[in-house]
Length: 282
Image (tube, rainbow, N blue to C red; front, side, top):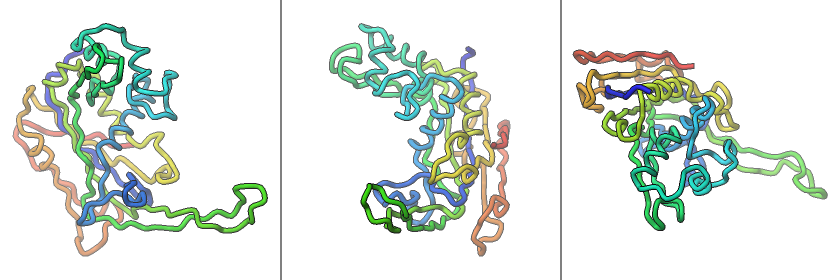
């Protein structure tokens, strides 16, 4: 595979309607919000979705969900012990792990499993080139809550009744911005290639495929588009912060509550010698 020689920055615009994109377990599983009311999706949640999409595309993934495990191993420790050869040096261990698992060479990983590292009690850390920010909504979000009830017996002999089971929370509408970058220096260390970057791009475009649940019904979460900046050198022509800021999104009418992508204006501030590729979402 060809070596990655160009720094990459990207922004994904994702629309959420009547769904809970990322519940907060410390707040009754309500959608994550900042203190000033903006919606959030954690970077861990986004990477989980990317791992699932990569797994759907046939890539080997180290950090698998229990319900998606496709190699018969029930823990990360078992996956390491049964996949990688024993008695490797720390350098060879890290190299082999990057070659074996896509998410390790993309996002990095800390291997600190008893008996799984090259030496007992010694951990191996891999820094990945793909970094992803916590997603944040462009404007503050409104959250609706409904009470969930049951009308059937859970156990034989129970009295049938509409008993309260809990609460369900959802974002009425929110436009979220997912920012990220790919570092060439770290890519060289993990073996992350040009082809790997293209696979990440495609998975970002299809981020919510096969991701439906009761909290996120099919069609309630949509990737509007991916903005992909490929610099002409390894270090980058501009800082990632400046590149991300060049995508400016504003409400057309601040006095109106935005309820669709059409309520926003999207503008790209020109950066000399650097233009984004735009890939429409699915």
